[in-house]
Image 1 (tube, one colour):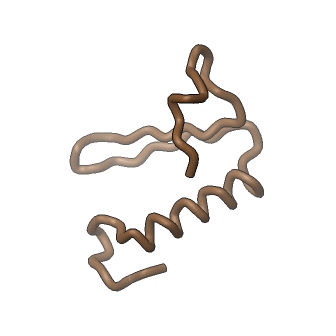
Image 2: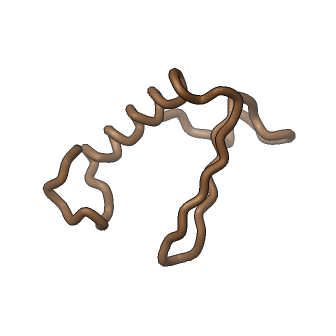
Length: 66
C-alpha cells in the first residue's frame, strides 16, 4: 500500500488502482451471493452493496467496469 500521503486523506491514483485490484480479487474469491456494508463519514453514512446480480430494474449500463 502506498503510504506516502496522509493516512486519512484522499487516495492517490496508485491507491485507487490497488483498491480496484483488491475489490476484483474479493469478488472472485470471497463474494458468495451478496455483501452489504456501511461506513460512517464526515458527510454521513455510506452504504455499499456488492452482488452477483443486478438489482431489479437496474440496467447494466448504469454501472462502470473497474
